[in-house]
Image 1 (cartoon, rainbow, N blue to C red):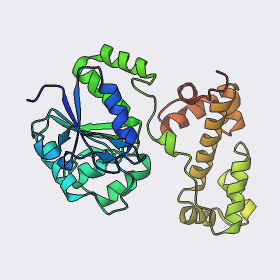
Image 2 (image 1 turned 30 degrees about the horizontal axis):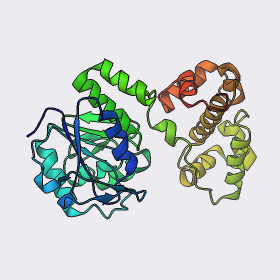
Image 3 (image 1 turned 180 degrees about the vertical axis):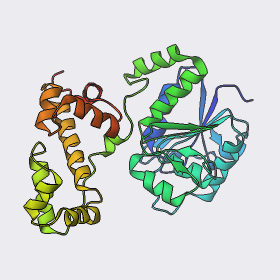
Image 4 (image 1 turned 90 degrees about the vertical axis):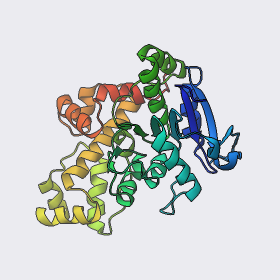
Length: 317
């Protein structure tokens, strides 16, 4: 018999262990009945090789279950999930009060048609692929989690914890959610979005040797003179030609690349040293702390002070 807080976690072989364990740990002890369900009710093996016991066969789960949780799987490289798993997610998600996904679980929801015409998110490294494979899904790459009607999707791995805390707050109030977050030593609402994790993605080394030297010079001295004119002069090309080279081989404009390097340099200093924000801003080429604050808010969704508080290295502890 369905209860108001009945949660079914849909699992299959290869499921990401933390996508299951994180949300379940949040919901445990906060008034939910949480059960794992798989095709035919068989035990499954997680992506780490650790087996997971299962309480239910998906075939026996009622369409009117309160909350359906769909964890992620290692990237499926366009091959899709087992049809029987997709069919079960479609059936349960259509009838449930709400359906959620963690990380790449969004692919399963999309394959089931549950994200058609909806806003959604997934792990930052998968957002572009999700949008390309499922053009009817409006992907929001910087969100920690996205609610669109009865469907809630969350970003990479630990964002499933954020999503579960949001469910607790919705169902049982902010005090219960705050207590759960405090017990797990996590943020009830973390600052910033996913871009604070993906901004350091490596740039593919350009084929042009001169352009590689320009990129290396920016990385070696983020606070140096890296205007378009200065970089074009170093490479002995016109500013227009340099911009074309950047677009073709880096994927950014020169200004975007320089800003990205400066943000990464500032992140590293905020995480690892005690220098003031003013000093870091000058060292990394922002000029003033206010300029750096505006860039951090635009790029990372969090000001420098909040970023430092969240990501500061624990070496002093």
